[in-house]
Length: 144
Image: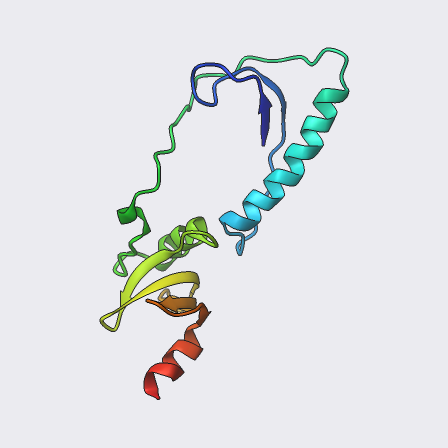
């Protein structure tokens, strides 16, 4: 989390305060946003309490630009390794969701994990036009 002075370039202004935090294996974008907001509040409070905040220029090494999420970024290629798919799902939850076709039916995937055998284990899904539910609940509903 960074408190910086804005300039014309995106996220390139001098830094007044910065703090990193560890991600837990079950964190998703929503939990990261929430924790970031808490830390941003703390950092901003610290910076504003200073009579004259000190701003340090950012290094240009390692600068990247995050492109806007496109519809194809939400698509899950179920042939990819499970840990990669789980990370994509975590990045898109809880607001956007990842999309997959499972047994010929489109689903939004909200939570998944890598099983001990390396396969992808769906945990929470949402069928088209339906509500979020556990994958087990979804499978039971399809059998009915």
